[in-house]
Image (tube, rainbow, N blue to C red):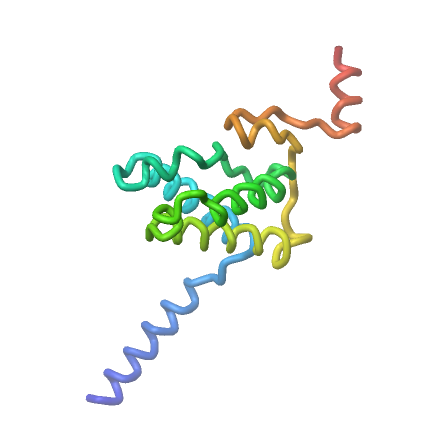
Length: 146
């Protein structure tokens, strides 16, 4: 009886492990970007951190934008050097700092050559409205169609 139970447990644990795929750099960056955006939304709406969020610059994380590294670096600088010590110690602000540091490190160090940037619209990260960037070959095709 115990042998059958042990076999059954081993079978289901192996099935569970085979369905789990390790996260890729791209999936981790996408997931962390979404986490940062939801955390920023909470910080902007929560009554204890609203005053802390007033000084934070507006950022819309688009991992396909090549300007994300510089914008994250600047945003991280503002979070680390927040003028209000009360805000620097708030748990959500500390969590935001950790998540942005992680995202920045993953993009610039771990996934350095794995990510593909489709646009270099720095204004799109500030406004949330990204304009498509056409490479020279695509631009030539668009001109020939006209």
